[in-house]
Length: 317
Image (cartoon, rainbow, N blue to C red; front, side):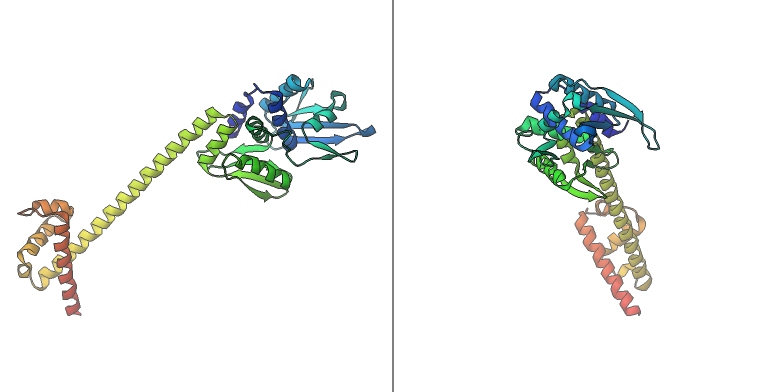
């Protein structure tokens, strides 16, 4: 089961809703995954389609418990390659579908004519609980979330730019930074930051999924920190080895050109130790000297030795 399906299944278990919350949640589901059909004699019907049985059961329960609509769940095979089951809930004229669509603000009347409504009115979303319910419904109807092991990406798919902007506005009222882009004929409201996705999961009540996401985030952060430390250690080791090789070459040049005995005693002592212990650190070389010298002191002496070698190289050109 995908992580997205886990989140939706968890959200679907959240059924202790007031009628206002149920209306907000249903309104969002109907807008993003519903189809309006006009038949003869001006009869209309409305169909909600989903591949997730938990969502179909939730819609069935909300319609029955809060709107006294006793519908049926129909099942058919998808036309897609995977041949998944598709669950359909049909609300007909006999079930007072027009009243439900107007109550859910999916349809509105203009001069006696019913038209689709792409606004989200305060009648549906008027407080924190109904806002959360609406976001939850929009996610169930047209949302998805990527496996956090791979990437952080949560999106809501809609088919109207104004409606997408309205959903974006509701989500961002919680301090999030969702954005809208167009993808072919759809409009996508998306969030790509892990922390903000966690916040949205908290908003819609997916607390178990939120904990799973946070565990993944912590593990990924730990892996990233370990990788950074390893890379840093590797870079430092490489730098140390290169410096030691360069120092040994400079000392050999001095030895062959003028002899180490021509160096001051403090430089000669360090040079001889570096030749004898090419792999030791500056701190370890300093501890071998008598009297011991600190890391910076050893570094200073080796720099002077390299400077002398550079001068000899220039004279040899």
